[in-house]
Image 1 (cartoon, rainbow over the protein chains, first blue to last red):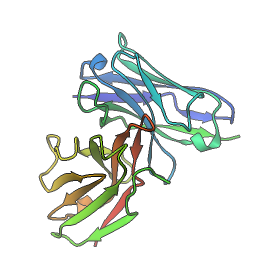
Image 2 (image 1 turned 120 degrees about the vertical axis):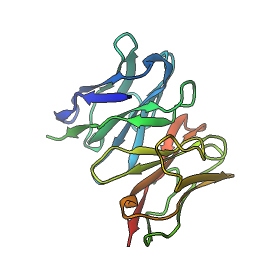
Image 3 (image 1 turned 90 degrees about the vertical axis):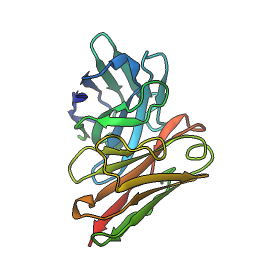
Image 4 (image 1 turned 30 degrees about the horizontal axis):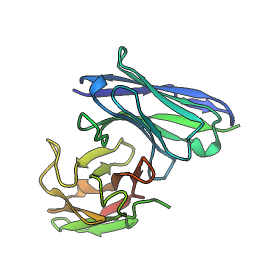
Length: 121
Length: 110
């Protein structure tokens, strides 16, 4: 079974940094696009970033471009999101999501349970 | 303001058929696959429909998806109380080089 376990969330001051991790199991990690999607309290889903299976291409929402960095370690079956320059509006539950299909179609199919990031002084 | 447009709410009675719409543009729905997700309160989203109209294994055939031009729809037939949830559409956007979500539709089963 596909399992995605996020960690690294917590309370951070504005301007601070956090690194989220997503430990994956139950599938060939390197064959799938991986995504980060967030959900602010009481709000809808917002795509944050995606990375190809090999890690050679990354994509970011304009709201996080230049502040967040997505990466993966295929030898450890782990996805990361380095978040710098955090703002109050980054407060959200961050979900790690695996593409449903292998290859270039990165549409999320399996989701972790999420990790809460709170940016506040 | 979401790139994909969904009505904020919808409702139906048990047994009824309900349709949730998602409107986009040529750069997203018009040229890429649409995905639909169900999110029950306090839980992670669950994939309902992939690639416009495909149901992953385990998703009841009461749920169906369709796409025409720059719009897509999710239909739920034989409505049940457990279908009360938030529903989101999503697609890749070639112009933004990113994935876009609809604002979500909150479905109430009366």
